[in-house]
Image (cartoon, rainbow over all chains, first blue to last red; front, top):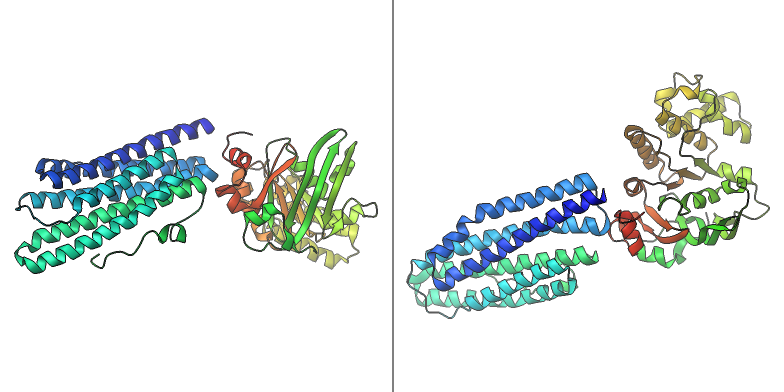
Length: 230
Length: 271
């Protein structure tokens, strides 16, 4: 029983880590597509979506199989439950990377906007959060996960800044309305990616420490309010 | 049922934030020796009244010895002696003035293998009441029926109460033994691996029955089947090499056990 269980858990670990790597790569590529105004990169991300979705289904399938066949308890149970939830967040991050790539594709066909939106900084921070939480997941490091929760408020602040900048720019140049709305969407997608990274961090803390920290002062006072534009 | 568990042990306090029910059985530094071998080592715990408490642990960990100590079944084992205190509703179980026959009426026991007497179904259940009480035939019939209903066996045997109990299936025999224990109106039911000799379907019937008896009786069950402990009990005690490693709410024990030894055992890493 133990040997079978361990073999199945190893298989699950490989699958969820492969999905993590794929999704992290998708976000990185989508952000580069905006920065470099590179249509090919954007299309690569969009084309990969089906593969990511299928990986998510495989991970869920494996979790369900382990729950049904091995009935894990304690740390083993928390691991499977956390993977099941992290899997969903990774899939959503993959979707958001595709949305960013789609906006990038649109912006590639438009003249470049010369407004300081801090999108690059925002993308960098969101990617750093994602990388940090996935590293924490690999190392089962709850302290590192807690730091990821803290970082979320910085992204939220930039998102509010982008909203105000876009609002101002639309008022000044109504003709740019459509590309500006795309910029707002990108900021929103990056902010959501950071939110999902935070969810993963919270699930990781549960996995390691057995405590549900969601909605508790421990993490929520560091996740300040969402922008009005959302 | 005295000794309100307000001053519960640290283990219990940590395990559950909710106030515990009253304590029904309490061990205080309780040990059991088989000659020089200390099978149970200074165990302290409080078993809550009206709840199902499971005792788990690998073979030879002392869980059955502890269970059997609660109705002094070990008295029959040569060379067996105890140290420390074991209290039932605040009463010291091992004091010389304890009437063991009365005690065993109050604390019934169901064993691993069903052990009906080679008598009729009716006589099996009526055996205890005939021994302990003087009842008329109709009162006795009422007690037998109530016990068989409580043991979820009545519908299956009501038309063959005079048949020999040996002819019942294994699962029915085990429920008959439970009915026999219930017939003398005990407060506590001790179950020593009550389903290990039964098939999955009969096991399920017993587990359902345990659930129905919850609240009416304090049930203490020793089981090797950890999923069973998780399914049927509200509290779990984990023992290893005679020592009580951890005691707490079953939900906590099976999701976030405090002790590494508990985690290793319930996840199958040893034992």
